[in-house]
Amino acid sequence: GPVILVRGNQGALDQETKNVIQQLGASVINIAGGNAVVSSGVEASVWSIPGISNVNRLGGSQRYSTSELINNQAFSSARVAYVSTGENIPDGLAAAASAGCLLSLFNPLSRLKIESHAFGIFQCSFSKNA
Image 1: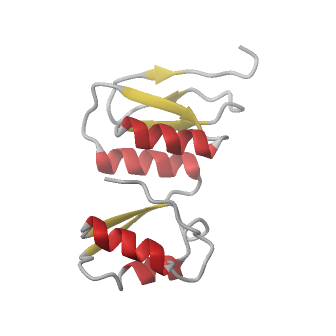
Image 2: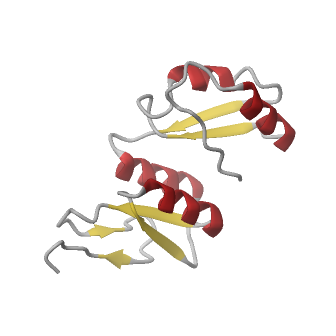
């Protein structure tokens, strides 16, 4: 489905965004991020949109675990995987929308090996000293 960017720190969803969601005929809304990213007020106002039957919040302790939650919920497999840095969020959002496919964020400053355990499709390692 479409990715709709919202002002997550607001107390409620603006009417224009509500109209877009209603025009799309959406019945299920997946909120990407915890309450610190998309407020509980925005979540509550989504429920007021006619036709909405379910609102799921996919929010981890930080953006990388949120990415994993979203991928696990949305995809059981993927022929192609897109990987984007989690340090430049607009790049990741643009890639996710254009890919319509698995997107994993990884931290380029971390020396930790990041791999997709859920799908076994790819593995990538990144070291700032590499």
